[in-house]
Image 1 (cartoon, rainbow, N blue to C red):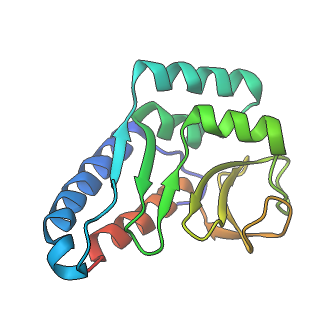
Image 2 (cartoon, helix red, strand yellow):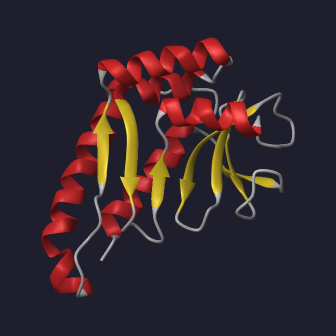
Length: 165
């Protein structure tokens, strides 16, 4: 919901629901698809990821919703959901920001790339809280709004996990 900030309790509930749906999916994956699944997980935050989040905040002021996400979730690897989804660790986000800078997005003073899909498209969050997705597998091409907020993006991802055959 635009204007509302992400709450850690909501992210924790989302992570638990995603874990339950992934457990169910992995149990039926091999018979359904005929090959074993990759490593699909939403990893909880650790002391190490909290330190990396603090270092990221020191590097660049990041949107509060991203800080909240990283306070609960360190990263996610979902190679078997659609064509794959990956929430990058805060250390990876910092490394990519140092190398590539912010993502180009209309109306945002800065958009920080924090995730990608299996096709190489990038997801960035702007200072408005909107989440942007690259139109191609490139850091320098156009980005379009993918979700009005981090919560909306996570809800979309949760539905994809729950509805994956």
